[in-house]
Length: 317
Image (cartoon, rainbow, N blue to C red):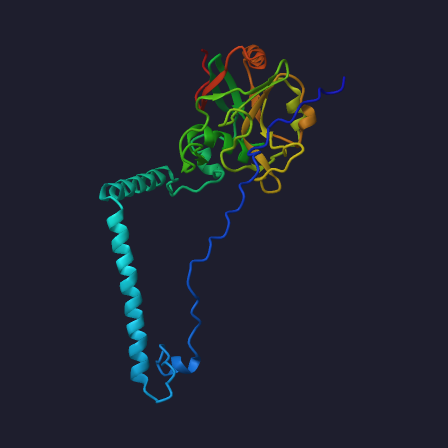
């Protein structure tokens, strides 16, 4: 029996077209003053002397120029005074306060630098305190109950480190609200946004619709026996980025970086995805996963991922 055709496992992010580039600001009034001739610079005479009049009297020329300049500035000052008298003082104060309020709000809403580096975590840091030579226990706490899983860090160390780092707050990510880089547990209060009955259920998107990432992606981490592992129900793997159909992604990932935070639990054979996704491990409690899949697919009510616990014993509920 041929494998079931499966839609793309991750919807590409940021489908909106990029904002148009801002227009160049209009040039301010006035003339551009060219650099003085080099000989004037050499002798320190940056302000070049005015041309002499027919009588050779530089003083008269300079005096007339100075008088004209003073007259111009006095006239401009008189206009400013008349303008100030015409505008009520309260209106000026109110306008100033509004401008200050707008500027203050803009400063508050602007992303504040956190000093944290945005990018995948180091394997040693993300998996510190865990035995990488043995299956690492993990629990997916959901609104429908707990799903017990094990992670294989020997076969896919970078992918498991990304999943564990995001779960434990050891992997920095971009906060959707502030736009800044933060360091805290990532898999908190997210939804299972996609399901195909008796085949798969998907979560791990901060947006909740398949378009979100932690702000970066990594390369696929294949293993020689991925086809056999993906053929078994309960396979846990990180979903792959797919370019949006019939449109241009304004912010595509670098070539080869297609694995983000979204993960899938399978209920049927998905061996055809070998080499296309990163297999993390395997999950139990498949009756619960199957019930969740039916609820998500029907839209009866939201199914939420409350947290991912890594390293604790797989004790019973």
